[in-house]
Image: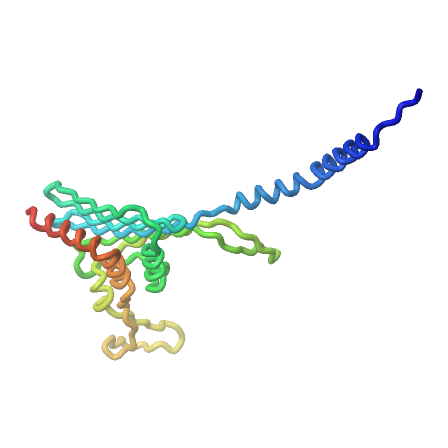
Length: 231
């Protein structure tokens, strides 16, 4: 007697074969796309640090540090004295826009354009600025094709006396020694010049010193007063 395969079993086998074909044909492609998305995962990361070193007592060093990673902000202030005392104030992590707002402010004030400056003015106090940002950006290759990549940029800038740089940094003169240049001695008092003063250093230092709510700044002021009094 001849047996017939039930129609239900035929449908089941056909369905399994179709699923296997779909899996081997399309899943590797989707997996590759998933790996690409994972590779592009790029946590937002912002960091600002201002370090101030003093050549003379009572303050040895001050440090302001602000971070924001994926919308979670942290900040701290540390002061050390020549007498050995150290005070650190730490604000707990919070989901606020404080650090992001500060970062936008210092970018607006030109932090990415600052350069190291030779010691001028009060050279007994040394300032070091550090800025870092990680973000997704779109770049183009030589052929003009674009792609999105995760990049980190950072800078460190050193200088002294930001108020001097903003107000009294001196002037720059340009003398053309090419054809037609005057052969007689040049009178610098009559030459046109451009000022070297740059207010951005002072603005950014003030931005960072003014960071935080009143409760944070009052603790910073109290810490400074303690170290200044520990002579």
